Structure formats: C-alpha cells, structure tokens
Image (cartoon, rainbow, N blue to C red; front, top):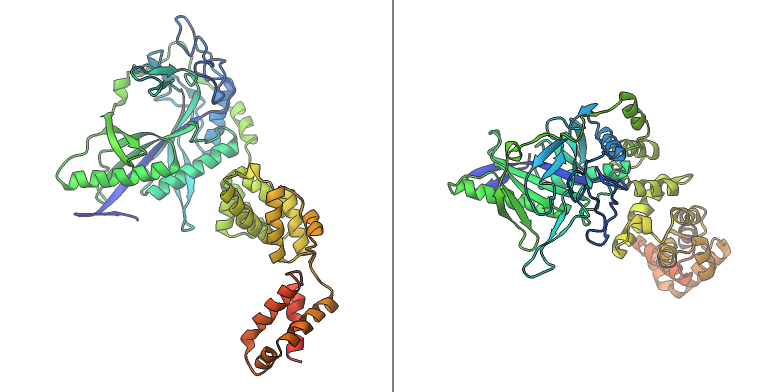
Length: 483
C-alpha cells in the first residue's frame, strides 16, 4: 500500500473518478442536431436544444445502444428499466434551466475495470454506474471584455457519466484507470476519448484518512481534461488536505477547480448534494424499457476487448506481459502488430513495432493510423532480415528511409545497393585484407588477447559497408584467426 508521509505519520488517499464520455453518434441525445466538433458557434442547435417553449425531447436509439454497449464492455449490469430525470440548476449555458440526466435508476449498474500497473501487477476497480445525460452549452469568457458569449452547439450532446467506486489509492492508479477506460471505449467505438476536444472529461473526488480509518471528507475537482492533469491534481489536493488537517483545520466538502498554470486546486463552490438539484422523473419522457434479446444481440457484436486480446497475445504469440500490454493499449496498434506478425516471428515483429516504429512515431508526433510505414511494408522489411537479404543493422537504415519516404523495403535495398553479402569468397577476401593490414593485432590475438576479435569484426564490417552477413563473418574470421 502506498501512503503519503505527513507531519503526524502516514496518510492514505482515497480516489473516485466520474468520467463524462461523449457518445459517438451523428445526432444529439434528444434532437436531430449534428454533433461534429469544431463547427461555427450556434450552428448545430435545434429548437429542442435551445429550449424553445413547447419543444419535446425524442430519444436517440443509437445513444441508448452505445450506452448498453459500453456497459457490456465494462462487464456491468444492464438495467432493462431505467428512468430519465430532471436535474434542476440555473446557468446561462443551460437554456432549459434543468439537465435531463439519470439518478436513482440508471441504464447501467455495477461493473469493473482491471488496471494494468507499471510494476506488472493488476488490480480491479469497481464501476458504480453508467448513466446517460445531455451536455450543457459552453460559456465563452474571452470573446469580449465585459460580456460572456454562449455557444449551444454542445447543448443536448449525449454523455455517458461513468462513476467509479472509491477504490483507487494513488495518482498512478487513477492514470492507469483513465488509460484503460479510454482504451475500452475506443475498442467499443462508443467514445473517441479525445480529452483535448472535450469528448472525455473527468471530475476527480479526493479525500484523505489515516490508514484503517473511515473515509474522510471529499473534495471534487471539476472538468480536468488530461490524464497528466488528473494525476497532478490528485497529488496537490491530497497534500493540501493533509496540511489543513494537521494544522488543526477541517476539510469542507466543496467543488474545486484545477489551475493548469499554477498547478494547484482552488475553491469554486460548496459541494451540492442530490437534494439541492431537486431531481424528479422527466414528465416528457417515459421510463426506458429495454428488451433482453436486444441487449443480447448487442453483446454478440462486441469486439475482442483489451484484457482478452492481451491474454491471447501472451498465449498465442508468447509475448511478455509488458509487450502484450503495450500492443493492446489501442485497437489500431494491436491490429497493426497482428498484420506484421502474420506468418512471421512474433517476437521479432513485436520488437520492431514497439521499438523502431513507436520510437519514430513518438518523435514525429504521429499516431499509428498516420504511420508512413504500413504494416504490410514493415512485414516486408522483416522478411528481408529473415531471408538474409539484409542484416539487422542495415534494416535500421532501411527503416529510417521507409519512414521518410513511405517506400517499400525491397525497393530501398535495391536502390541503395544494401543487399547483404553472403558470398563466402567476397567475405574471405575482405577478412584477408583486414588481417594483412593488421598483422601486429593478429599476432596479439593469437598470443591470447581474445578481446581483439571484436576489433576484427568491426574492421570487416567497415570494409564491406556493413553488408557482410554477420554470422558468416564470425564463422570465417574465427577459422582464419585460429588457423
């Protein structure tokens, strides 16, 4: 167990996360307005979204299906009966004066997520519920010196609020939870997980306690939009609460904001309780009743999810737990690897994908979907290594050219004359020339200085511009030096 050391001894941090994930759907939850990101302000707003009098919500079946699909992916209970409620509060970007959400009867109940931790261990975090709700609009405070502008494009967009149990104890576990949840959502195709665009946002609940004590008073940090900021906010807020308590103060239950420039939390308002929102069932929407066969049909369409894929990669490809975890973290990465590995040495394929490819992509700031080297072309490069057309060292030079140009490995090898030398006569000639030019070192080697063997290998490879087959060089050089 990981504790924070305070003036009065060890403290334990208790963390729960509420993730707002935007549903992938062409239309909003209760209207036909578009949901495309980046549209001009107020260009995707229906009369329903703007709360014109007399406008009634009509539920979007695709959004319901996406919520059920997500619940199934989280191994959660699907509630065949659920209710939409009105959550009443007043803000300029909420034109109705209430948000249509779910409270006591959500569409999805308890589930779980298995975390993959950096030390190779794993642990399970419980999911309390997943409920559907409509998003609010957006207040723009930087468009005018004295006025706030309102953009209602987001108003009515479908959100899945995924609430965890307070099962996490470190910022690292919270980061692992968000990465795993985002991966599952992307595999399922229910949310793109793009935190920069706001399609996945996180409210962070943090409290501290002495080990073994009851839960402390929690504070909620609202709308944190990156995993790095979530982890930093937890670290800061936990230490802040410990200092307050150890100095004789008490923690107020409140909502706080994360300041991304000062890297600190600051008070926003006292925390509302459920009764403050005056929840009641929305009179314009009937209770939602799902057919069990319809839910089962959705279950049959689920893809192989990260945990199952990871287990298969370990069993079928004999990959390490770490390598398998890296490869299945994103669906596109896993599919890329499987294309490369098909009919080839899976360990070699894994090394090239996680090593060279991911290194170059990271340096170039590209995602695997934008890789200049296709999976088929990387497989072609590995084939050239396997049939001794090129050496592993030359392959790295070829890969660099592939990444720059997008060309096939075989074309680059032919164009640059990089084909490996396997002619034993040519290799013997190069070795003889190196030995003749270094007669003194030959004598030293033969007198017992075995470490000079590496020197001769290097000289032969230099003489052949790195093209000589390393295994043949070692074999012939060994015979000649000892002859």
